[in-house]
Image (cartoon, rainbow, N blue to C red; front, side, top):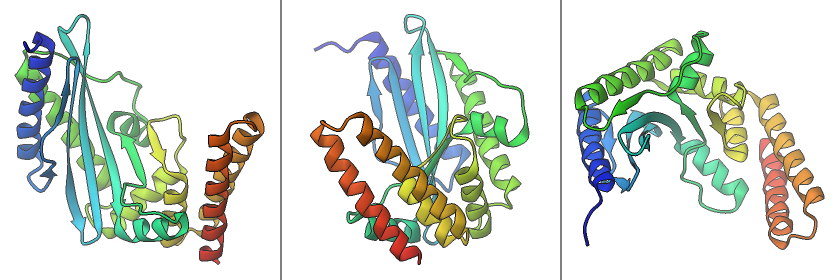
Length: 235
């Protein structure tokens, strides 16, 4: 079976991106392997912050214009073992995933009031441009963290609380129950309860709109149960 030119290009760019990112961020532990399809690739890793806290990063390349160009996007994720533990208890199932993720460029624009810009696009055979884009992204990540005090527990929690309160249309995603657990553990109890109310309202609305869909009814029941356990745990 022949490998298409686009699939070969995605694999090559993905391998280069993985190697270069590990050089730019030597404390990041890159994940084994990578995802490469005919018109895209994705690589990622995790950087320990302090024991129990990790910063995840993922780099995505998406082909454009008949496969001659690739758009490069980088996302970051926040992992906290204490949050994951509480989240697992209130949700009734194992939750080892991140509780927040954010697009680096969108977050930089929102945080520093910069003009809106599109994600960088490179020619798929221009590794020098790719290297420059990766350096730019790595620098933005450091800039965001330094704004909140640096790579320590206080900086991690400050960034997390900002993300929890940031507009949801700016490239930031906070998982409802996970975000509520984080807000509670980081000392912002009122915000934790607000997040629970938002989650409850959204699922009540979903159920009202789709009352005859068994999957919606079942998920609603599960989510409401988790919210009740969270409220009890928060006191």
